[in-house]
Length: 271
Length: 271
Image 1 (spheres, rainbow over the protein chains, first blue to last red):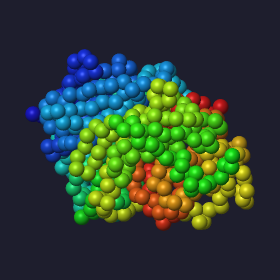
Image 2: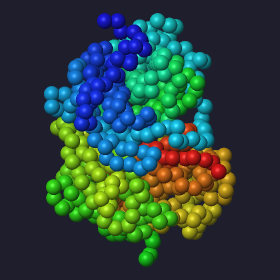
Image 3: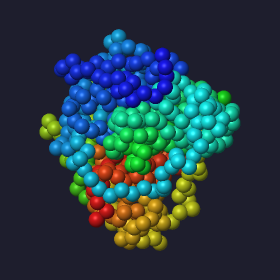
Image 4: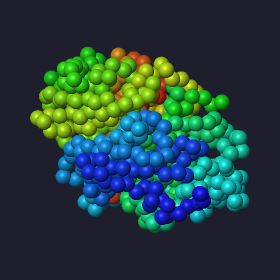
């Protein structure tokens, strides 16, 4: 199995099948994992595909995913229920099951983005990857390499080499990681994968101390991405009491904000 | 009706009654509104009270609330369902209805916070309100006043006068508002009210252009607050396509992070 980015593979990995009665069947595909565990952003994107398909709405505005159990490769059964809404917003909840156990709990807001418009303003300039030195998981470029999981290869992830201190065993840097990810087709759900695509940003501050399991991830989808690489800036500002938050901001190649996410994850030690 | 902070009033306003079968009755109390509309943070706190009461768990780790319709004064019926979980995390969903219409859709993660511990680290120093000049809604102190809604009086909200430019009709400042709010009893759900307690931070950047209705709010509860004022820093970094995000970080009087929230809200014009 070749683990390099391929837009067709992304489409296939996110394909879902409507079974009727709010039931949607998805498949957790091989290669979309982090050292054997299916990737959280990929599972969120599958959940996004399921609620979009079930509701018939063109756009996802927000999606919240609770990760209740580790997913496995193979079929994932979504059961989607409409909760209510107004003229422009529809809320649905969903569960995703494997072998009758709930793996994900989902709540999403959907509608038609073309019904909305307004001012664009940002508090600070966005990160421009064209002025950065980027390196692939194999460590191909001029920066220090990092041993990326299957997932990083699958998405064509490239990290800003100035945010790679965790890979050298350093700590004490800002808890920020910047990266780019391929999205040749402008797949709208690629932005959800991007929200959880980097190594944990906290590693640059507190050391690469192992697993940072997501409890809850909420992403706001803010625009439909144009075809081309996505840029990702992930950071953590508060570690306390066994938990941390990780935020991600995702722009498309034209510099449009396409997604913004925050996750609550466990963090037990800086070891 | 006196609209000043009173810890007993806060407790009463957040009281819920278990009816059995996952049904919980709450009351949207008078005075917890923003110019006639029940306050989003207060409704989130009611949802928090309902899921805590229904689950029997001591702590809320995260709560997501979708605001589907404007709430009214009077009874609010929650219907809570357990979705699943693991040894340490329980996920529930809930709806809140008034006159048989869904007003709120809720998903929450609950458990016992004492089962977790770990390092404390922050990316930057927290805001210290002791070095700030604060003003109450009536404009009592040395700064420029602001005409606060009922809600601001109820919570004892005081704003940092250096983040009040919207009140003078100015714009172009950072989209940040800093404030304190009373919490004499250390009520854990006061932190949820605090997450939405300030005027919209975007007003300081783009002008006080009216309503900023919340579509979705997710808060992470990170510690149980000690008795005493909460500090709130709210800001917005991205306005686009008819939406914005507003983040809030809430600390207790001992400087412990107690809540962190992000909301997706509509913003159609800078007028």
